[in-house]
Length: 224
Image (cartoon, rainbow, N blue to C red):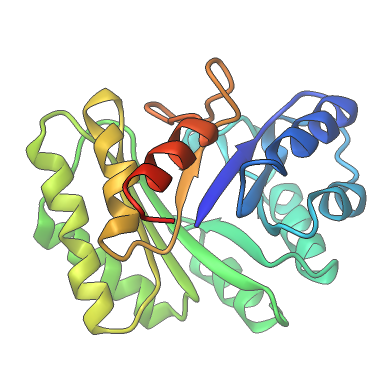
């Protein structure tokens, strides 16, 4: 599944980006952290019939939201109330907040996301993260690290085998130029989803490939 990450400063820009994303995406991630005065109901409606992921990424996790934590979480709770398919909640979020959202998630699936923007930790360390996410009740895990060598791609993609054994949906790939190959390989190896941009200059994370390019490669390799 290709998820197009959409971020813009205004509602009109977001709606235009969503319309463009509809043409190439299986799912659309609504990045609220870069948006002033988000009208979430309108955004979710515009993203249908694609799957909708709502994310309000904190500045501590590479996002743009620098306000109070209660306000950040309020939008995720609203997304649940509006029937979003997924909300993305950072794994480092305080445990009581994670537990409260899980307890009230309804039909919405909760993605616990772990990011490391500097390097790729050891496989052992990442397996511990995977184990903890699963034990905490995540519907989907997301482990994304920065590739500083080609071997980092092997480390991160090796997590997919363990997740598959445990029947735990996992998003796993590397960021950065050296990690680009993992954004495609993850789908071939059983990754739950990969993230793509609307085009050059519209990336929401280092090393994102445009959705149209990713789709073309998948079709040529018969991975669709």
